[in-house]
Every structure is written in C-alpha cells, then in structure tokens.
Image 1 (spheres, one colour):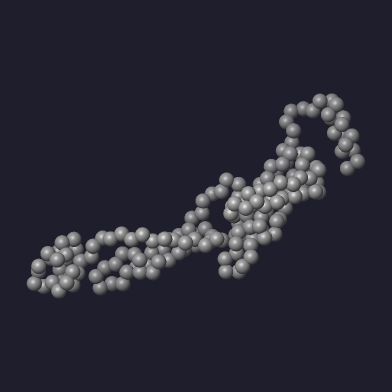
Image 2 (image 1 turned 90 degrees about the vertical axis):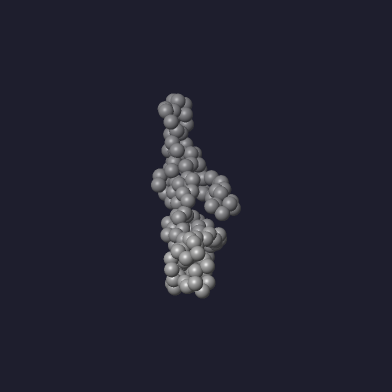
Length: 168
C-alpha cells in the first residue's frame, strides 16, 4: 500500500499499488431500454449519470437514439401508417373486402364498394400509430395499385367486357 493512499481512488497518483489499473476501473452495466408504442425515429432515451466517470467529476449521461426497422409493407409518416395495396382490376371495379395485418399484429378490415381509380387513396381513421402524449391514434392510409390483365384478351372476352362496361 502507498503511504499517500487514503482509499481506492483517493490518492491522486495515477498508478499507486491500491489502484494498479488507474484511479477508476472499467466496469460494465446492463441497461434496459423501454420503447413506448408510438416512439418516433430519432427520439432519445436518456440514462442520467450512466456514462463514463472520472475522479472528482460527475458521471455523464448516456443517450440512446431510437432507430426504427423498415417494415415489409408499411411506412410511417408521423403518426400515420402508409400501405400500398395491389388489387386486381375486377376488385377495383366491383369492390372487395379483406383484412390487413397491422404492425401490432391485429387484423384491420379493409372494405371498398365504390369503383377505385388508379392512384386513389383510402384513409382508415384511428388505425395508425399511437399518438404519444396526445392520446388516440394516427390513420392508416392505403394507396391502391391496380393490377391489369397481362397479354391480350380473346375476342369473346373483349366483347363481353366491352358490353359490361358500355353503360358506365
């Protein structure tokens, strides 16, 4: 033991016998980060006094910046979720009913009875992401992409289709 040493880290000499690795020793800590539903890209979670410390100084804060994973079908714009749904021409003309799996795992019903034009959008109120601090939910915005038949139609089908659409 060094005579100048009062206790570990109290001597002020960087390498005394009581502190062979310096005045402070490296350590690890496990921190759990709870991300609330509705948290946006770039928001920060702060752990006060959880970063490096030095003798005579207050430990710093650790900031965790949220990065969101890309979803296979949805994109996020604020509290709204956007989805592009591909539908066959027959459904665009006659309507349809289906379900979509939300990012939270629940099933959302999507129903259309009117004719859907190319590029048309449908807004499902309250089916988006949670609004943090304000309550409620954003919307789910669906853009429709219409799938047209490939190739050419037989003369019989062409005549039947022309006849069916003649009154529109």
